[in-house]
Length: 602
Image 1 (cartoon, one colour):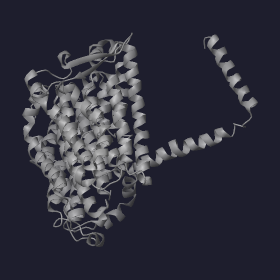
Image 2: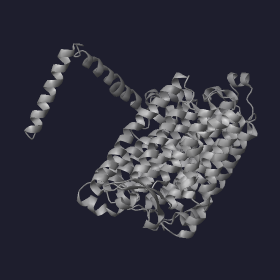
Image 3: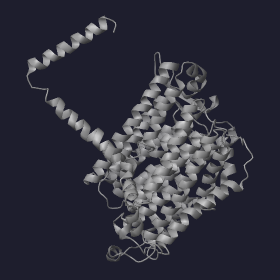
Image 4: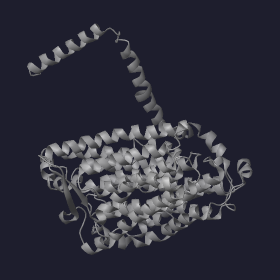
């Protein structure tokens, strides 16, 4: 590997981000190219670690994989700055760095002429560096610091166009909703420290028996999973991600494919070595993932905003990954490996889909699919690459999504969770059918049929090469990466154990059934026009309304946490008369009661 690569892979973008403003003072174009250059330097450091992981033969979180540097917090805690150089951290670092570099190239065309580009590139580099720092961290304190850096960047970039009220609200919503998960993670880390006296991953791994004996393993595991639920937009904290589409499409691509939402999956995969002894944790991860996958897919069926459809698909596919981790009783079970393989596939085809959406938005200025149609001939590169991305998302062979999703089906069939894994398998197969249906709907509404009057007046055109070349690169990767399962298994050093002899044709048959069940109705409605979408919408109006409203989660949160807290505050204000003597008397009385209780040992 390149010298000091495990450190410089995240330090370089972090140090470089404030230099963006220096480059702007020289020339705006130099600033733009500087940001892209830093992205590729970070990617080079990440890629340079890959051969060493192959050669080392070390598994996930072994003692030899941790590198320590300077003493960070002296004293009783003695926290050292450290990085983990194992297959999982290097894999995730490459996802963030390589996909991030491709998105930065695309930004040269997509963001050209926008105001505030120095701020944009500052936070993009900070985002990439923060995510790499998160996955390379060797202890929970470092992980949590970068966890918050990633959250801050998502807030700033989702609300990049802050002059738009929708963007401001979306950025704030993302920040506040994910805080609920972040508090859970912080509590879990604190409880782990009080139980073990250390923040190190290795120390936590070695203290498993003590944690189990103290009855703390499951509470700590569930608290930390709460952090993953928030960051990876799982049930019930998924509501921030669909609204995050108010940011630039490049930001959406980075959040969905390489950074923010992958952090939660990484956290569960990283802590799996510690928490897999808790059956309650495994079942919680499994069912939260599976139910989220299904619910998000159903919401994508009725969304008319193309980026919102892709956002729901991200929530759904993250659910697949969580379910795969949950059905694995150890990291040598197929489910753990399958979830990471699917993460690789998803990173590629989801970056591709959001950048395709960006090309369409660049040409038409709208995300509403009802105002599109007939774009196939005007935007052939965008059309064909988007088709590849959607078919990969749906798990159509031979694209990468087919191989990784097929592996998740096989993992569920082999899992030793018994009936739970079979229930989850059924949910995931049904979800796969829905995924193919809404994917075909996107293609039909966006690229096929007659042009809308809106599209005719805006004269759609293909994006410039600086935007289409990244699309072609990602589409090519979506076509070939699925064939490298064995190489990926060798890289991850997990030595997958197969617990039952499941015939390979069974998951293939499940995939074929899902594609048939999802594809035929979509074809009849959106291609053959045998049934009109309007008639289905009217006949299923209550269900359509339920899905359109996102199962009323937003309405519930608004009623309880927004209007409810405002009402509580207004009522509380009534007891504040504004008289200093009155307020001081109440404070003294309260303190007196507290002291009496404390002295009395209550």
